[in-house]
Amino acid sequence: MKPFEIQHITYLPAEVLTLEKEAIAEGFRFLTRLISEWHSGKNRFNAPGECLMAAYLNQQGIGIGGLSVDPYNQPNTARLRRVYVAPAARNQHVGHALVKALVAHAALHFQKVRLSTDTFAGDAFYLRCGFMRTEDVHATHLMELLNP
Image (cartoon, rainbow, N blue to C red; front, side, top):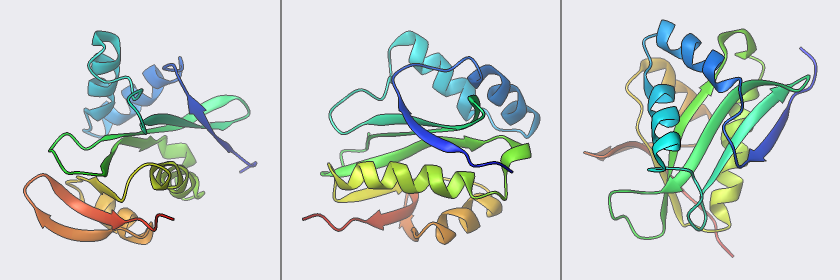
């Protein structure tokens, strides 16, 4: 696979519809929620410290993920959301690079990052990315950040 790049984006790229179809085929609806919340204005990843990033290969979107303020009133905490990589781009470190970029952004604004996943593969992936499991009703994984 050729080198890919991670970009901070302020729009939903056209490829998100292709990614959504692939996600639905795998039984995931979180990209549908991303698109719906974006269009309604409920979540555009534009509050202070938030961001939306995409992975591109040859100017084609192959992954997406966002970082928002944690909605469960956790002070100084970000929430990793809607991380998805196209099946054809998996096992090429795209997801890891995307999460790493999101966490690096989070470290500029927050002290922790939390997320929820409900799959074994997701659990293993986030552990490889440096997250720890947490026993919380609103999160499955947590990462403490080193802030200056």
